[in-house]
Image (cartoon, rainbow, N blue to C red):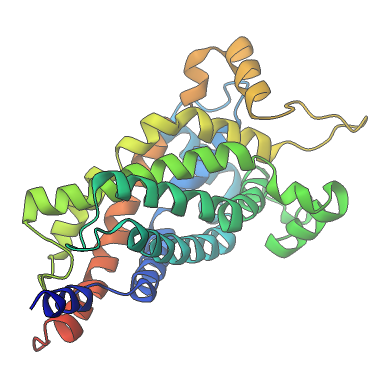
Amino acid sequence: MAAAAKTTERKKQIPPYMKAVSGSLGGVVEACCLQPIDVIKTRLQLDRVGAYKGISHCGSTVVRTEGVRALWKGLTPFATHLTLKYTLRMGSNAMFQTLFKDSETGKVSNRGRLLSGFGAGVLEALAIVTPFEVVKIRLQQQKGLRPELFKYKGPIHCARTIVREESILGLWSGAAPTVMRNGTNQAVMFTAKNAFDVLLWNKHEGDGKVLQPWQSMISGFLAGTAGPFCTGPFDVVKTRLMAQTRDSEGGLRYRGMVHAIRTIYAEEGLVALWRGLLPRLMRIPPGQAIMWAVADQVTGLYEMRYLQNAPL
């Protein structure tokens, strides 16, 4: 009987590849909806002279001086990177969780969820996020209405130029703060999402219950709010390190994560380390809401069809 119960429990687990598919689909939808907010966030974080007075002023300035399409600058690398990132994040988190499951009950503790999320965040940061965000930020920081004058002509040209001028390691500029940001974000997010699903909707993985999209959006939105507050300095430093290029003498303004934090604090004050927080809060929680609304529908239908044998 015990063996049969364990077999049943194993059958009720959604396979990692299905989590990966659900994440990739959610990533595409999120990227298309929220790219303008990401462009504004990047511009605000790179603004050291106070050219933009806030989110609305930044957005209107970009539209007025560069056109509406400028709000979707970097969409190709952003959408590609989100799709790959969510595929790796959701799939690797599911695989890590299998390592922390109780051998008898099949349940994962909150500690296991935190470690699984952190591991997934570190993996995505090194394998996908850092090089894609370097290209995205370099494209987004270019200003003007004449693309022919831009240094970078597109994502591929940008990547090639960085490799030629800065070596392949240039694509991993800002890797340290990116690892810290993504690891912390995903540790909090996966743990919080599961907690909100159980607390608000009594939803447990494998129970065959499919959340309504609005329910997934509420859980995802709430789960995505904590990360930006905790990781603001890492995000600002990441953006500065990724955006910088060598001067005429081959030097760099920031020599690394710690040096960048110290320099920004000394020159711009403590608040500067959370610059761009509001647009991050405007992008990340809604982004998680959109992504989970799509992902939960995909995994929910899988549960109904293959785990519960329920009619669709």
